[in-house]
Image (cartoon, rainbow, N blue to C red):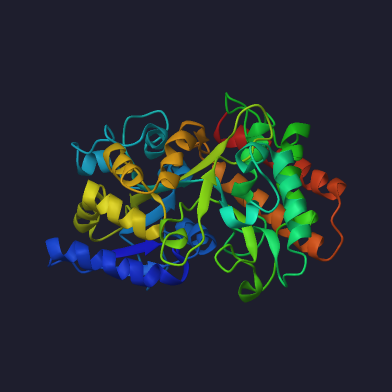
Length: 401
């Protein structure tokens, strides 16, 4: 079986997957598994060639996909109908927010299966925040309060070379599209209208939400487009806070580590918002070893495997019993996520979601470069968002009308 995955644990990715495969093979000794690691951009490009692969091209059997790619890959004929492969496959024990993203829209047929998920939260170093605030939980409950705390931290640690109040949680060190959604949702906007017939990307509320996040870079509270080795981190003491979807079980705990607390993402509206990103497993219709792929899916959903893998990857199990087992057997900090989950939202599983995210990724990549070069203006960002809104509306008319 050939398994395509993304580098979700950074430098540890190959080691983590090697351990995962070794555990699977203890129960399935005859299985032959090859793991290939692709970035999200590489995977996005490759999935469009799976229907008609070139001669000699590697054909995967099982693929890790973001939850909102399910509808697109089902429509394109790439995703196998899991309900036909195994009519007994069920989502009854999966966490409720993850279920809708596994079906072919409008049907009860499963075309992908939950593997794990992460969700956004704010982490902060207790030893740093005590110098600038007596009540961090209250001040960090709003976006305005977050910016105020960043300003005080920046002043307090001004003599520390390479220090930034906020560690950049994006693995590329750029601006993250997925990090804008909590602020956008807080402002009352979204990618699409509730009926999925129109877009809200062009609205003032959407633009303000994007600007809320970009302000972290504009005010130099968060580094962007810097060499990875020069970026300050919370662990090194050159950053005090981190907006991240990783739960930090492996990073924040251990001998000699400073105490870290976790809070909901500061709100830009009346209620805090959390971005939930599910990762699913999808069997390729052109795959040659669907039997092993299906066994791997079912093995991965078992509670003991869910907890062990999620702990190593600093993510969360996708099923109710394993999720509760992880957070309530861990530190008090991790139990905060039970509350955060209640306000978590995911992107909709419709055909065009992945394409729209790619449009926004390109816009924020350009904005990041403009900020570094001192050329960024809100007007230029607004123009690009208006263009993206028109493209999105056209796509909606083609695929969702």
